[in-house]
Image 1 (cartoon, rainbow, N blue to C red):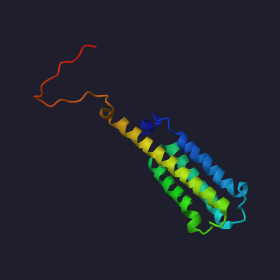
Image 2: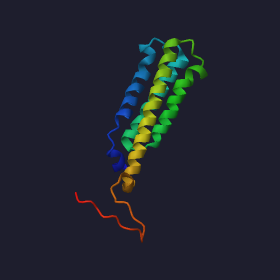
Image 3: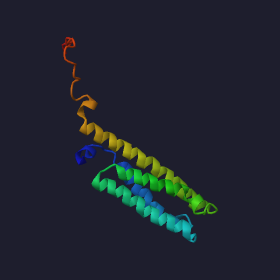
Length: 145
């Protein structure tokens, strides 16, 4: 299974998620909401968890951590409403935009990785093996190339 996902050159999504996670961790100081404790700790903890999820995919190559990362990003996107820090515009924008971006990237990477694994383990699905004709079916003459 590791060789199937190695053939997929779409690791850029997970690397981008790691970059966004690092920006999320430092965003309370960059965007000026370090005084809002709930928003600050939400950004720091979720940033670390998102980076760990994306790094797990890069290191061990399964596709299921991408779905966990997408779920954590969903929490990040809705957390301003749940944790009630919507009055801080910078924290709300950072959490919502980063969350939506990571959701898109994580699901994109998961689907691409799952497709690559499927096609690597089912070669007939990509047309490597010729289709099997049922016994007794008339054979079509092959065209000369």
